[in-house]
Length: 77
Image 1 (cartoon, one colour):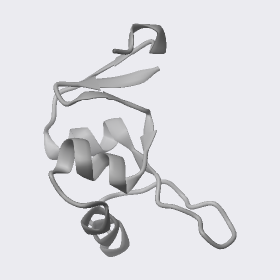
Image 2 (spheres, helix red, strand yellow):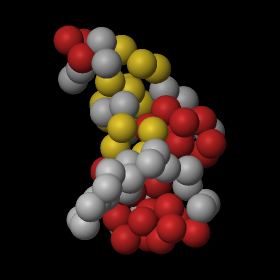
Image 3 (cartoon, one colour):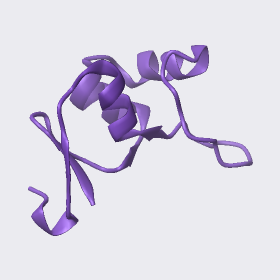
């Protein structure tokens, strides 16, 4: 399954860099700052050093009012 937006297809769970570049119009660092401040809700981080922020794509798009649809990966562009 993928999340289809006018900005292109996105994975169900995405990194701050991908969200920033494709949807938010921000740098990955700016999106990570929003994650750290709690402005963007994230999924639990994996244990250990170097764990990255993970954003539930559809939930984020809902929060910022971006329309999307969830389609099978076989329909991804």
